Image (cartoon, rainbow, N blue to C red; front, side, top):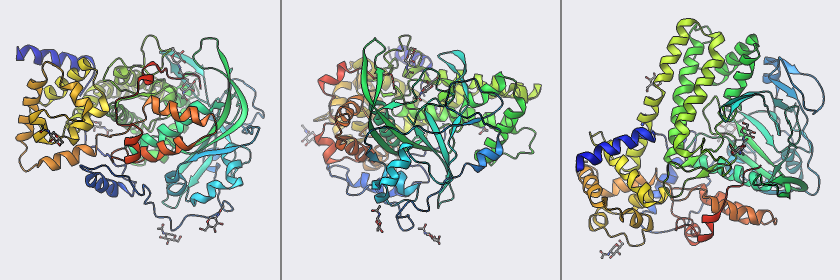
Length: 585
Ligand SMILES: *[C@@H]1O[C@H](CO)[C@@H](O)[C@H](O)[C@H]1NC(C)=O
Ligand SMILES: *[C@@H]1O[C@H](CO)[C@@H](O)[C@H](O)[C@H]1NC(C)=O
Ligand SMILES: *[C@@H]1O[C@H](CO)[C@@H](O)[C@H](O)[C@H]1NC(C)=O
Ligand SMILES: *[C@@H]1O[C@H](CO)[C@@H](O)[C@H](O)[C@H]1NC(C)=O
Ligand SMILES: *[C@@H]1O[C@H](CO)[C@@H](O)[C@H](O)[C@H]1NC(C)=O
Ligand SMILES: *[C@@H]1O[C@H](CO)[C@@H](O)[C@H](O)[C@H]1NC(C)=O
């Protein structure tokens, strides 16, 4: 009987592309307060407490006003031909990477809804009080241009839902310029929701409060979970009416416009290269590739004849790693088109994303995605599809031999992904070293979670908080997710296997295991109902809950009194079950 189960489990693993790679970095290495949060996590070990300060960014060199704040577009404009046609009318653009495009100011009174102190101080070198100024409101909403800014809309193409979609491009985003911060990092500032561009197609260039709150909160939440992502500095809302058919069912509703100031080291996507390749603009393709390699893959030498192959291999590996990290927190992106996939393998373009609650490989965050093309369990395969398209785009600049090599690299993608998943889930279970049956322990557990609809986040979290003694006695008092899991008829079999495995980890105390696991298994994620509740208030100009969520999700591994009171680690409320993800944005 046991053997049968084992075979079954392995089949499942293969089918749902589970298990993984590498040394995990749960704390982004550039993050100064990583260790203090670790300590806080350990300190909170058994008792609930609030976090006093989530900020330990050294504020000594921050600037207290915007007078000297400058961005630059020189590097980008010098490197590439720019479409000089003036005007934000929709058109087909050729032979350039960017079009000049001026943001359209939002009308009506503007309000600063929320800022990320971590971004404002830690990346933009600004005192947080600067964000309260009128100047900031104007700059961050697109009403006034920052000194040095030559706003640009990026021309790209992409495969959407499996098919080549031709020219897409920034339809409602403006790149303001690059900012070189005091740490020597170059960040690209972009406004989203800032009006029409040459790439707006049928869109109005605006974003609504609903989708902007979600993007703002999720990019920051992902960062604090340790997952590579674009960042969000601020969210500004207006009274400008924007019409949206939220569920594509003919019910057009008047909503309000909002602008997010977002940042990434680079916004180039797979689709950035695809469009050049598709239209035979090969000099420009080489030009863009060389630029990206020089700026972001500096370990590759530009005079290396294999540079494009090494670039490709790196993107393949890093994409596998990124998707594995998404899976480790139950994140479903929702629109994994090639134009939504970053060449730096960071998470970008937060739209109809969702965090999985009950474990279900078929979880689909976009309710209009009837076929489940971008269901959570398919993300790794969609990544492979996108990387195939990247290879097609690169083909004109690769030799026959390099193309052959690149195909071999792509063939290893699944292996790289599986290795990474395997490592991540081992860490999530607190397993050290490598034993033959580790795969079984992982897959067996996931299968039980699927059968019992256990909450993905809280099952792992409670397993991190429970003592070996409680486990042994199956005492799951106040552990609702473990209680659900333990209702499985094979739970005892799994538990025995797991406890035996743990007991073989010599020199690993139960407390060590708990600490380790609590640093990788978050207690708080941005559940859809949480975002929805904050959004409803935001639409009535009450931003307190957005702020609260930002605060709590900035320390997702630390138990916090307020979050507990709000039920963020409790069984989701009844009303959450009937909630649909708002699709149009
Ligand atoms: C602040 O700036 C000064 C001079 O620019 C520099 O020497 C110092 O290292 C900086 N300190 C921090 C904490 O960044
Ligand atoms: C921010 O605070 C500094 C002192 O820390 C002050 O000099 C500055 O005027 C303040 N700026 C604004 C916009 O309030
Ligand atoms: C990609 O990952 C594989 C497997 O870990 C490794 O052998 C290879 O060197 C990596 N390639 C690059 C370019 O990092
Ligand atoms: C993702 O790409 C699609 C086009 O494929 C685009 O319409 C959409 O705006 C992008 N998603 C987000 C959230 O930006
Ligand atoms: C959701 O899926 C549907 C069906 O595939 C698609 O048409 C729509 O664009 C998706 N929504 C978003 C925001 O990408
Ligand atoms: C179960 O665990 C809780 C929390 O550690 C403890 O307070 C309680 O006494 C335990 N109950 C039993 C029956 O062991």
